[in-house]
Image 1 (cartoon, protein in one colour):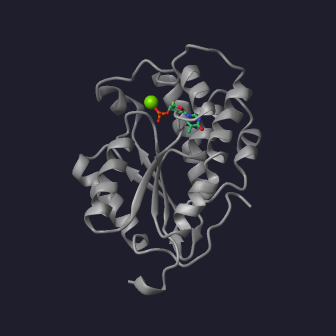
Image 2 (cartoon, protein in one colour; image 1 turned 180 degrees about the vertical axis):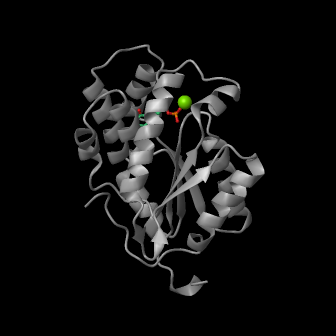
Length: 219
Ligand code: FDM
Ligand code: MG
């Protein structure tokens, strides 16, 4: 417990394939934090409510088409337009949970065949998460959970490629920051309760705030 010396909220990102349970686990975690009287907020990328977000939404529903690189840059711009509110929330002591972030940006575009380094470039210098939870599930298991939806990318072969990219991102991000692991892979094939407990174990050390300054991604 470092309680009184903490100076900002933790930035916690949840990543994973479609049907990995990411959004429900993020909601459960938010509830758990709020029950413990920890000021917390849940964000989600893409944030489909902004002008850029509406363009992304229409692309994902296949109502419009865009060049692969153009849509990649819009996903990144959608994070940049919220970067200031991310850092102000953290500095005001709010713990931020984020359902997808830059790792999804790279994983999905690189899975389509765009060069990995090119994909990473526009997200360099975004606020860096203190912890990324990667909810890992085999695409076959994800499929058995009621199937994929109708949106672009919700196809098993695509998900398989995306998983490979996430694994690479995990290897490259798995240093430790402030003595803690920055990337934790969670076995999302377990029961909802078991996944929730694994997540809580990883998150608990951060929920009373963090002392180290907010860093920038890949700087
Ligand atoms: N996605 C998400 C991307 O391709 N790039 C990004 O930067 C982000 C944040 O958008 F298939 C993909 C991942 C997913 C789709 O995400 C919509 P949600 O979580 O289903 O809304
Ligand atoms: Mg989806």
